[in-house]
Image (cartoon, protein in one colour):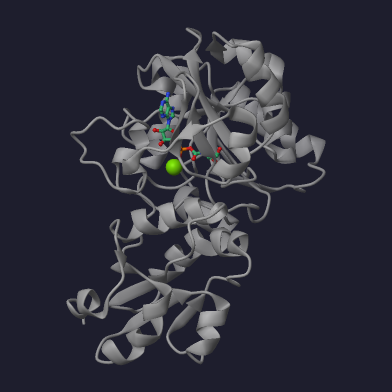
Length: 349
Ligand code: TXA
Ligand code: MG
């Protein structure tokens, strides 16, 4: 039986957080909201409790978890080799949607770190997440709350669909603010390396962390046999069941005519949807606000699978600011390439 508790996202009720923290302390699993996506968490010091997360998600054991802390002086419990310089940056960037790869403290069981010498650490900027970690008295290991390979949960109905009956407790804190996972930066190498684009933009991070190297392969899928920099990135991700193609904005208006003999749907901005008279479109929000589009992306992937469509198209967006992470998820969900010509698209009509 899964208990579902509705909790105020701005002023979390003490009693509810107390109940959830008892579950964590007793080796149970709790799904809770963060400012990025929902997380599925357990006591990071308890290897057996963390194993339950892998089972519930159907996650391969070689994909390590992110450890969440609520205050800076908890950092020593999970990581080692922390420099004063890092602390200065962390004071500015945390709490927030950025996970740092650091050297792991031996206290952290191998289930959490997948036998790596390093660990991903994040202090989330969400009152419920912070209160839960604080009251549990331990760091909480938590990957995104979705069945492995599916889009992360950004709304409570996603969480309930994926985890009702599979975890001890679910905290309903409403929709998550960013709707996309945290940015991951490897701090154990110089210059620092981006492992996953995310809610914190590179432009903003570089102001505090200096130059961040972006691997050329960041948007492409690795084979499972290849060693991935962030192990999770080698797996197929975020993908809806329906065949999805990313299409350059200028080509979108050509689709209705080219695919008139197929059941198709176009995921696009509200402006583009209007241009197409709303026909066969799903609006992601205004292209004047890429944060809105990003926030709705995973929900649109889940909705897509409920629609009777043979093929789906998604508009490409400029890869600046949050648009870089947005396009990373769009490309991962659509097979890593953007369609830029009518000739290429014709193969699918
Ligand atoms: O926004 C987020 O980061 C959410 C919320 C719940 O905090 N969490 C999240 O966790 O997205 P998850 O497990 O879905 O993604 C964690 C990623 C995986 O790709 C994993 O391989 C990578 O972080 N990772 C974890 N530890 C690592 C390490 N030591 N070195 C490299 N990559 C690591
Ligand atoms: Mg995930």
